[in-house]
Length: 173
Image (cartoon, rainbow, N blue to C red; front, top):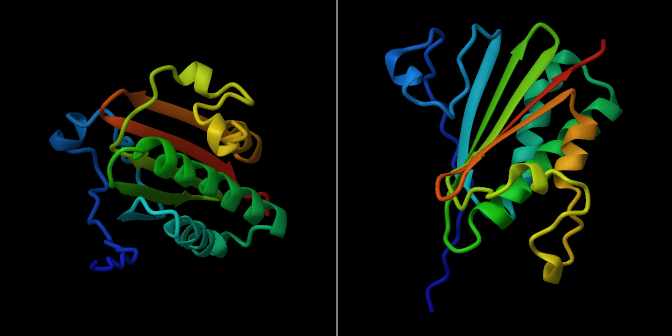
């Protein structure tokens, strides 16, 4: 049997700074603003890439000089969002995760997006302790952690098309 080794693939995407006609036709993409710095990473939805996403986000925000607590909060929120995409978004087939990070002033903007299963009831999924995978001993706290550790959380999902998680955190210098 052939062993498949998958490594994170990082592609820096040339994202236009002004909203284009194409961007207007993509309702799930972030409305592009003039950020001081931004990066888009795409990587396979594999559990070993959760750590890659955490560290990439931590490295990106370093210039804002976050506290250890702020860095830990950010890494936990990223971990929860990426893990949700891997476990719930791509339960039945392999896929890709898009992570967008942007900085304006002292605020970090984050998007984690999958193109998988989607969430039938986002309101229910955001309830603490709700899980669709009790047999896997999932705690159902992913969205609650994201909400607790970040300043804002938005979840947009469509069944059969995927889920977009948007988060924001201002670093208190």
